[in-house]
Length: 284
Image (cartoon, rainbow, N blue to C red):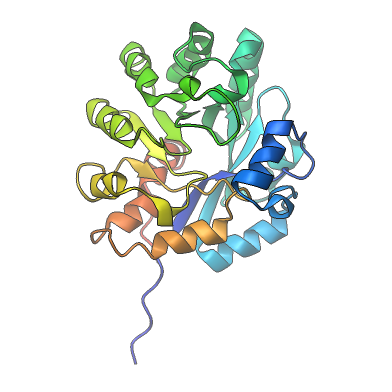
């Protein structure tokens, strides 16, 4: 009897481990209670052993753990130090912090396994093409560090115009060497995001906080055609659980052969890991 087919491996490019102990502004409580309707599951700290067990069970080879430039989570550093083969770091930067935030990002990137910077426009209330972001974009371009930028209408009651993906048009023009990853999808501006990804070689999208069962048809079509190497899997665990998002992704029967493997693993490796760790090894 032949062995069952091995499930395609995954990299989760957006994992939070301190949602239980972090501050809970009203917008975050609203999102947990009204938007995702699972506050007990969201507001919890994730322990290292628990996360590794989940990753092993789900076939997630590596996770990108979130921390911030000016409020570094020692627990995130400990995860990466204890299991460098499983965990790397992303670093959120508040652009309003100016050069203080930029220097903190640079120091972390030089001393820790940082593979990604993040900015979250709705949290600072400033459109993503504003000049206050440019020092962060410039430093990331200089370091060859990809940056994720939340796009799409945010779940919290905050202005959506700050995250219109069309604002990335001039950012990508001004920083042609900067790798930009649109985070949390681009709803309802999927076609704008797709057109921009066709236009800019270094522009990508990750599906954090967006359940695969609800991917729009235009995104599926793009993944199956010219966007095979443009879309990265992410959960935003525990906001959306790693288990739900990985399993829903593997149930996407509307993807052409080979596309799921690129979405779950290959694209993230190429964009975030290859520079630091070299080419991906074949799945065993």
